Image 1 (tube, rainbow, N blue to C red):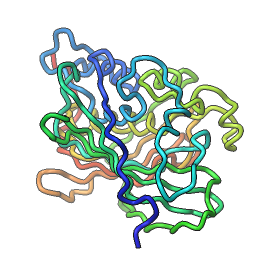
Image 2 (image 1 turned 180 degrees about the vertical axis):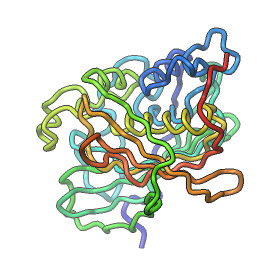
Image 3 (image 1 turned 120 degrees about the vertical axis):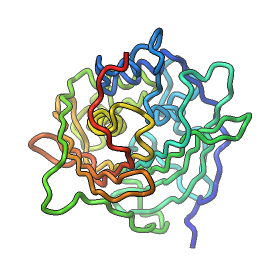
Image 4 (image 1 turned 180 degrees about the horizontal axis):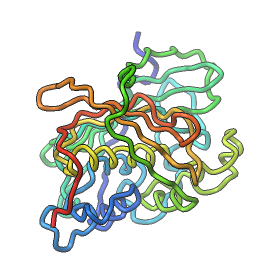
Length: 310
């Protein structure tokens, strides 16, 4: 039996980005000065969009100004399910498939996000899950550039009689094997305030009051910041910082990260190949604390650490 709302398609949403947007994104997720192909568009012949950039577009759309996050989240009603409160929503999990490299600007072309509901699930007292598929499409050619399958978790908004939903597939790290790579990311109080400038203006990541109401004690960092930061580290350490060396990236958002936390990512090569792509597993923890990204998995061509491309 399909869940309520399954198959519902949102109206296509036009999205756009500039070279400056791409540079800002790369800076806010930790790209470094030896990765000028992500950070210096004026003269670098290899200037590229960081592969996970499209995850910001559902928030940014085609705006350059600050967006009212709550109003935007309430813009479309999914038929057959309750009205969920966007003031109490966090990321559940996310898979992004990189199908075609993005142009460094959308200028002169029309891109759309085409969004379809895969399911809406009632998890009881903890809350409800809305799972969607979102394709970034060239509206004129119909070509799909990225496909994201993800879920949002609406905290304490369950018990409405909906289905619990299927069990999710797990990708645990190999047992009894030390990580092949580890790297760290020291966040600061400024981390979420800088990342939000990409277009994700959820007040949860800037003002303490929403986080207190949700039981987090104050501001938490965007789950997608940790997601993007981990992807950057994997691509830098294993993929030579070449966006052509990653095909898929996914993780589950397991617990919140607070400004000032140090993130430690442990990475395992599995040796399992899917065509030319090796399956990589990873876990991100807050140093001395909980796992914040679990179920980490990527498909990559492993070539080693990046050096300057100039």
